[in-house]
Figure 1 (tube, one colour):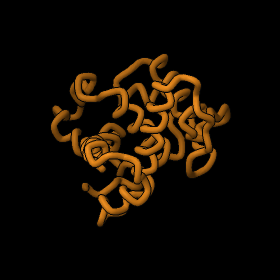
Figure 2 (cartoon, one colour; figure 1 turned 60 degrees about the vertical axis):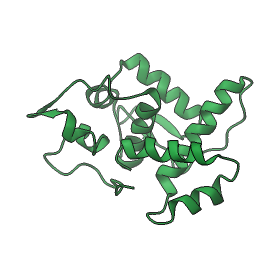
Figure 3 (cartoon, one colour; figure 1 turned 90 degrees about the horizontal axis):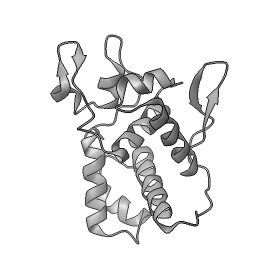
Figure 4 (cartoon, helix red, strand yellow; figure 1 turned 180 degrees about the horizontal axis):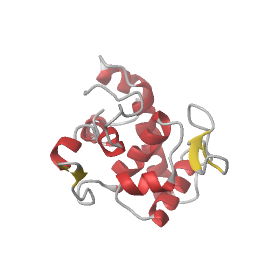
Length: 166
């Protein structure tokens, strides 16, 4: 797996290159980035939002709109889904931006809808991978922490995170 970004973008780098370290080289044309809308799935967008929240002190709606494809309505729905998945994100009136209240995920109560439960389970698993996956013996760590998840799902999870630069 690629080395994970762990800090804010260096001076001169754009927030977009910080969110998409591996994809940015392909998308960049001079100083402006090409349209990313065809590149990101909803899950990739949610994981990118989680990455920003984890590695930046604050993230405004404008910053989300500047570096990710989607509207403010899309990001509002995404942030609601992140909260449902246990991400402790709140809006700070003082900062006029979204911040994480604390590290880690909050416990969640299972939703009534089984499809929604699967989505939340997948997001929580991917968030845990983003936070805790070691650089070596990733397969063994994954199997120890997610014993009921198939090898195929594990490979898909790794491919998804790899597409985002993890």
